[in-house]
Length: 276
Image 1 (cartoon, one colour):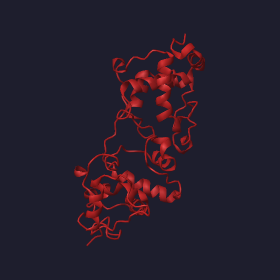
Image 2 (cartoon, rainbow, N blue to C red):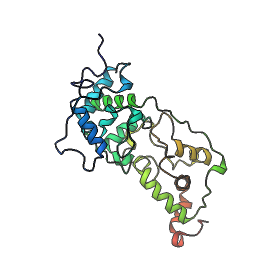
Image 3 (cartoon, rainbow, N blue to C red):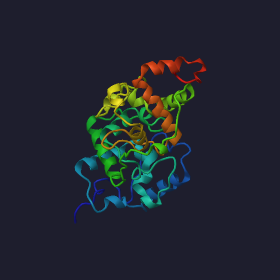
Image 4 (cartoon, one colour):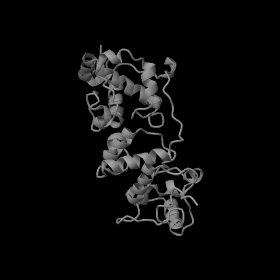
């Protein structure tokens, strides 16, 4: 009989052995997670249905071992491996089979400095892992959600972009959104020099490049903010930011390529008047 993908992990698929971290269960963990853990220890849940028929690659299997070894499994994401996706409730801890597909460099940046990528995450840093361990873990996570559909950015109609005037109020609102969600990659000055920008390939877009910015339509840039850009670490924000917030941050980004207008709006009286 051929070896199943999880047979090399002690107990996995045959009464999973659950490692509780030294600090115990995550404070405030939902009762469903506690129930799931108890069920796992009782050996009632087998291997994930998505892995039973197709073996993991060597790198993916090594990533599974790391996932099992590190707190990402025992403290948070146990249900991703234990509960069928259709039955896994949504909530505080995401089902990693349903999360958007990410590039290797996105995961790398996220593991090194999670809050530079997702500002409100409770994910701890895994910068202590070796490069080989990170590659294996990333390969395993990419296997988990490889069937999630990828949206391709398409220019949207102008009437679908909320109108935003060039004034201090919109500038400040856009700056708040940018500082919260974009700063870690694109940097304070918008040139791609954020905290984790150097980990990404291709590097984050340099918004101070006026020649490039003037060639891009607002429709296209708004669509990239909305659904992301395939084959890069740029994520979509349609499920995080409202259309007005996306339009505000787009207006703010446009100022990076026009430092004169940016200076005018920043020194405007009360920041309420138009920049001109």
